Length: 391
Figure 1 (cartoon, helix red, strand yellow):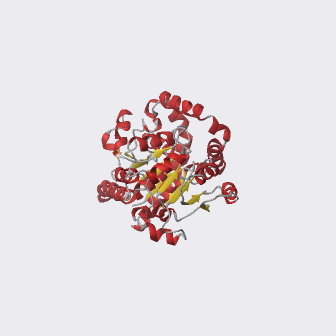
Figure 2 (spheres, helix red, strand yellow; figure 1 turned 45 degrees about the horizontal axis):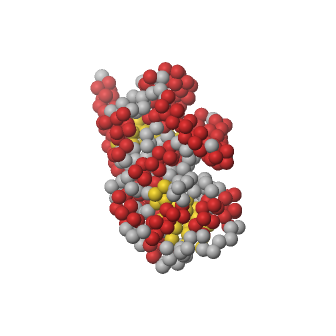
Figure 3 (tube, rainbow, N blue to C red; figure 1 turned 90 degrees about the vertical axis):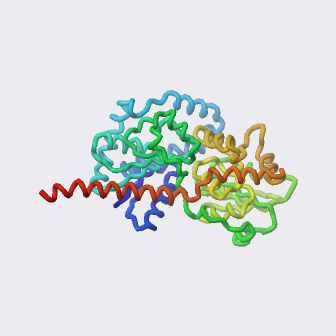
């Protein structure tokens, strides 16, 4: 059997999920490929889509107009027409569907996994026309279910971050048998845990000092410099690791800051699992993958710099179930960090709450299911072909 994983470079989360699944399948000797959908259609289109995304989340104007962004997102969600009821959307998707069909005809996968909802729309259009009949999985990479997931009648399964999202899909008329609450697929590196002292020593940190991990996502989003200066004024000692991702400009800016406390500045890092093990509190924007990684490690979290829309809802989910604290105008980051480091039992209760929502083996469990369904499809296809061969 062969698996095709279709992703889209809109941020890096969808690509990270695709890589985690591909690595697990390859470990099991299952042939698979990752296809960046927009890049396949046109490198220029991919640059436009990614560029638009970067501009939207990095511009100061967008950040200041947060309430406008939230209202726009709410209006879009309420006014969204499901794909199976939206003839124009299917017609609009048809040129892309025809183009992608050429790739499918050449590769002939036995299973398709989509890590981004617009990829799901194109595959749903292809499958609705009978051009493919293979099992199709869609991966929702957030702790909420946006309106675009409804109406994809030809998708076989939707993988969600938690069983507590099942109700959102049922309300959107997704049949329960299609819902797989297996957790967002993450690297298996987050399924093991290192002792704090060992992790700190390997990272050249003081093994006896309280430690923060400050993450701005893969693109170093948010006012990380402002966050550092606020935390630096807290009246107790700690050390911190700060990860800027691919934001080289932010990294250079942070390295010039003068602080009383120790802040180690990193760019993109492959040591995130070890860094989480080393920290007492993780401060992060509430992207679905970062949250899943934190839950897998069961680390107390403070959520800040949410991108209006999906990440606001991710934050609400985490706070609602006692899995994290979220920064607001009336609850600043200094207070959240102080509470987690000094309030007796708070961090421990949060870690215990996270146990029910953690899916450290999410990728392995998904791949078990994918391989099972793929082999069933291959066997059924062979059974159909055998009578024809006997003739």
